[in-house]
Length: 443
Image (cartoon, rainbow, N blue to C red):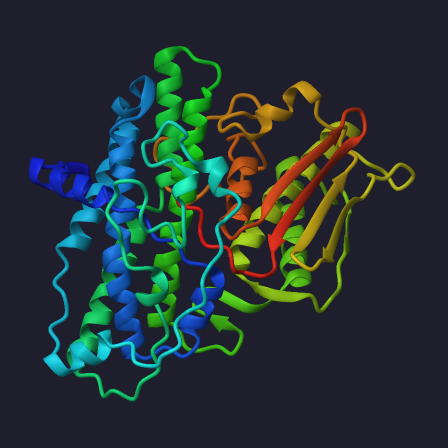
């Protein structure tokens, strides 16, 4: 069990070795093209890619968790998360590879005239996530897929390792068995890391109490951005692989990616969920109205869960601001001003604007809203036994809604921006990259 897990010196050597390799980002477009017609051969290729890539990503995080500033690494909850990552790393590198006959190995590795996945483009969010003091940080050396930086070891580009190879090979039962066992291991790893967000947050709270600190510094803020962005990426790769191996084919889905995600339907569901939470929290019969202005048939490839999470968190903020400003007892003759959600499609982006009249935010507080653990609610804490995979249900209070939502938007090349008019209200802009060609930002 991870509670008794300890990182041996031998394991540390392996972690440092794998952390010397750069991570390999993939784009949404590449994932869709790869998984459109999965066979046991392509799923084996994907398993082999993850067996190489996930240990590298996990090793980077274990090493960073061990070297955090201001004694943050010594907090019990941070050590617990470090051990989870190290245990998952050990399970992956020790997973026995599939045994294939020589002719199948040659066919699997041969490229022939196959069409590789298209190149991805650099994610514009990467520079904001990088640690500028880290020896790997050198934007001038980032070329191609960032598989060689400075003195760091080179890796074969993802386009030639993680691609859709159409073939009529008759794969032996051992391949099916390997894919199934590898998928079960990934499911167990994903479950182990379910409480990571809340456990890291608890670790930061432990640090704040030990230091008697009111807010976290910019260095810890930057680390949390990098750490949580990496977590989004790891869980996306695992979730996509598990879905390809376990779910029945669907004409509009490739794994967890919806190739025809309907923006109107996703946003409408987020509106209904946020209003429900608002009405439950304030014991109201009817919360502030939300008007959705969106083309009914606006579709593009995206992960619906990511977009739903972003919209839900932002709508909760707007609903709470309106209720706090106008009171809990709006009447027919004095109704709440509506919150407006406007969705438009441009050439590069799909943009969602959420506008409220909740009073806005003072200009001096704007930088703080992107800070983890910053909240306008008081008296909130995290239960020691809280095991949710992310912050769910509470109307507000943990200070993670905005910064995490921005990371989800940035993950596939989008962004999240906020403009406030103190005394009136707030506009939040969600930019989504409709081209889907940006690879993951992997600091």
